[in-house]
Amino acid sequence: MRTRRRLVSQRWSSLNFDRARVLGSEEDDDGHTGCVNALSWARDGELLLSAGDDRTVRVWRMDPTVDEDYPFLCRGILHTGHMANIFNAHMLPHSSNIATVAGDRQVRVHEMGQVRQYGPPADSRTDAKHSCIRRLRCHDGRVKRLVTEDSPHLFLTVSEDGTVRQHDLRTPPHDCSEDACPPPLIKVDFPLSTMAFSSLTSYQFVVAGESEYGYLFDRRHAGRFLKEERGMVENGMTHCVRRFGRRSPNSGGYREHITGARMSSQNGHELLLSYSGDAVYLYSTRDDAEDKSMSSKRPRDDSSSDTEDDTDSMSDHDPWLAQDAYSGVPLIMPRAQFAGARNVATIKDVNFLGPDDEFVTSGSDDGHFFVWRKKDGALQGLFEGDGSVVNVIEGHPHLPLVAASGIDTTVKLFAPVSGPSAFSRMDSADRIISSNANQAKFSRRVRGPDLSALLAAAVSDDSAECTHQ
View: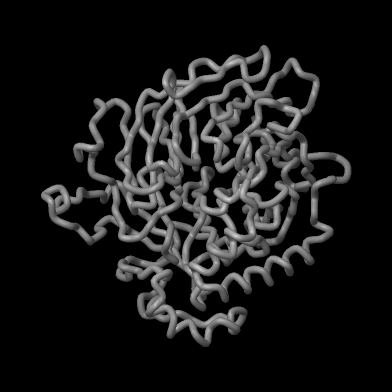
């Protein structure tokens, strides 16, 4: 086992990766017909799930009878019955059930059955009428992410309605229209769009969204919204134990929000947050909080001097800027920053890569995905991953294999090569990073609604939905 792990680490160390396979290409009738918003490995890396704007889930499986590198073929197509884009899909551990969340505010659980190992591709096509075993309508806003626990019955979902809910499939079905839904684990007064969780610290999770902070919750401290259950409004949040922020956020009228969050599966305490219009930041839940007298002051950043002059006057009146209602919660500052990618046009996720989570990765509006060395922030890889925008990157749990997706209808697999990489763009890194910085500076000058209008006009009709993930 140690020898195998050492060999895998060696393949990762050079990051000389290249595109190994395209899943769902034009020659493949089993590919998606819209943007691919969600990727997840299942059954310890045996399966890859993909989902997106076509409201289906594709199940990809490696076929050892095919004499090719990484011969993933589509072994199942799940028509979910969602009425809007799917944002996340995961197979529940120790089961064949797949949970999906979407823009129609619904959470659905599907029985996929046994995905055939071999035989013709996509030999299993399942529709919602026969596969959906649970439909949950507890959320009042679009449901953006779900995280699974080490259980076939339990999982968490986060929504733009500002809530995180825990779902237990062992409980009897209830009528969501009759206000019979269990109370949420948490409720905040701003939209949430991302959530991070590590099985090593399963009692903790981090949420983020239309705020400049990420928030750490500890379920050992979780209570109930008793006033709300009695028909009264509960504005307080009593079980947030830490906040995560930046010393010099990019304000200047730009809407502060976080698009992606990820906790390390290898140590359970490291956290990545990806800020729209800014960079990726690394935190640790074990770090000491900032002194309150310091955290109340926002130091100025010379790199943002062109927008700072009107920051103070705009932040008090701009409805796009979320107010921090939890200023008394201890604030943790980042350990490191990873810059170069551009995160403006769509919702970018963020992730760790490598057998020890020694790399950090993010997609970019330029169609590339960036890979930095975690320990020092050095750029180690820059790869063309999409014809337009890369939103999602997921590393295989054991192999040196990376799946990437975005605006394209395909999923790209990247793996180590011994020779030159046709899809590496490290030779053009300086130019790409400079261009991204200029574009980000422009976006910070554009106020929230104006930026949305510009983005909508800049994207073709075929991919317009993808800009509003």
